[in-house]
Image 1: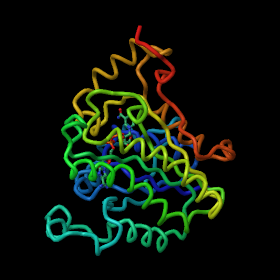
Image 2: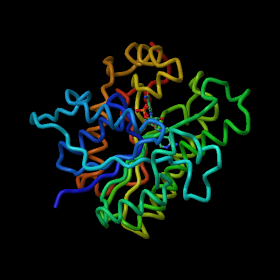
Image 3: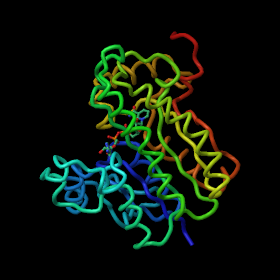
Image 4: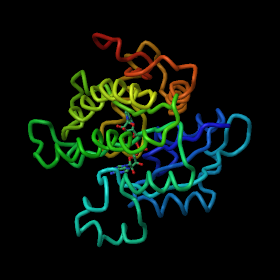
Length: 286
Ligand code: NAD
């Protein structure tokens, strides 16, 4: 049987989540997506209208099949957590069962189990503010959407993950080195995500035989990255200074995710794997 993957954080064809879905599909996995509720309508109608057909192309010429798209808001664990203003927000009213617990229940009902969980989402409402000017609200919101969301997804999915299963998240080197401009507590959120990767690798490994790794990816011009405002500069900096002076493609990250999710990586867990043209190894710019 092929493996089944749930990829949280895909709402267009520009980000890492989409590329990871493609690499997993190319390797024979069945693809389920979790799409942020406010972005669901545009994503699904674009899919239906064939807007992504060109980028659905796999190396063998076939098109990636997406078996099902689930609405998801990973900052809410169950319906009791959802505040009134979100409940009555018109972008949320059209969808149902999008809290983490409900999504996992739906996946269980629809398919029984999964093998691969991918967390490719982050959000920090104050990302453009320096940490020194970040509010408590902004900081906690960044951690909730970008770090705890992974704990919650793994906590709920692990019981329906087949032994030998794997989970992967995406992190950024701003967790361990100073990257001016990556503010709002997002650097803190990535530090938490990386630390949690180690602790969860132990706990999920012992309890469920599930592996937990994170990919520290180099800069990509995704929708989320454009919102931060310095992505072109980071891409230029990497081209100028990394050991491999080329632009990073999302596919290169997708392929490493497919490797980490596969039995080829059966002894890798609790790791931060750099996919950044080697930039992390530099001590000074050139
Ligand atoms: P992206 O815009 O493709 O992905 C982010 C996704 O998160 C979007 O689809 C958005 O709808 C979703 N999202 C936001 N809040 C959500 C919530 N509450 N519930 C569910 N979904 C939610 O951008 P990306 O850059 O590919 O980001 C994917 C991951 O890669 C993130 O963790 C990001 O931090 C990480 N990353 C990105 C870069 C980069 O340069 N682009 C570098 C290193 C790491």
